[in-house]
Image 1 (cartoon, helix red, strand yellow):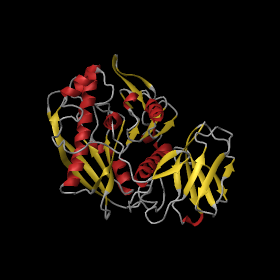
Image 2: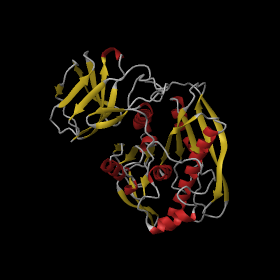
Image 3: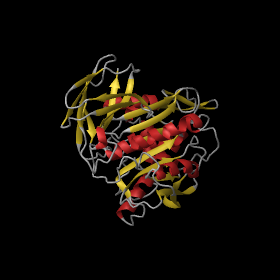
Image 4: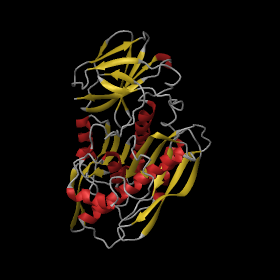
Length: 416
């Protein structure tokens, strides 16, 4: 499925594709990564659809839209978020703090309703699949509404090429399927029947099917897919954050229990990350130790929440601004190659810079956004660098010219 909405331009680094500088004047190295607005404007209770719950009750569906106050940008990237609550509880207002955080960084952020299970608990597996499919259709209706608004009244100045889906727990399960589930996937017959009974792959919570529900990326906070193989090569990039011993939504794969009844088998963030890497989809995974569920926003928020918010902003900004931090709309980008990639441990990393002869600064960041190494380079020729010993994994390499006269290059490098 062609869900990846590519930014223009390609830079080569380490034999991998780097999405290059789009003419997006609001990418100035601060907006989208840091708080650049003091206040947030909220438009609450906007109806984007309606439908019938699993219990047969009619429900109107609403969204709250958060915008940076005083923003003059003509178009803004938008993040559509869904709350958690095991598909039996929760409300869109639960994501107020998270939406405010995103809006202060310059995003339009949206928190949405979706239909919950409203029959007697416990659920069985068929009911759980049904309520998840309903939620997917509701989120897709919200995304279509935003594209329809952009094409008509344009109240929210949404960049229709840069709409991201995200959520927490059950909301992340919903968003993950919005991003990755497509008619071309190998969908089991029982799930195909449930999808068909809910209006097909787009759902039936609104009838504005002339607008797309595709997304430019996924922000997955402790979510999962029914089958990680729903991720294929043309799917959008993803950021996942998950507790390793999560007993509510599995980190790897397994069944989710509600009391004595097996509800559903899921494949969590680790499985999603492995599948994405196998098919060449950009994937960033932040794993926290312990048995909590969304602990980084709850029990361990003091320790981890700021880190997760920074990693989220950097992931989104990389997709928006072409994985180049800085004012690439105003200055040309540094041109460089780094190899080999993947890089075997204890082997030198070779870097060749083209068209620039001055000093350079190399920094390497972990996937949490924390710097783990830095080194000065003379520039103007190929250099072989002996990096400090780093654990195997995925890192962000940033190469910056002295004086910032060139926009720096940032991209992933894998150390084996």
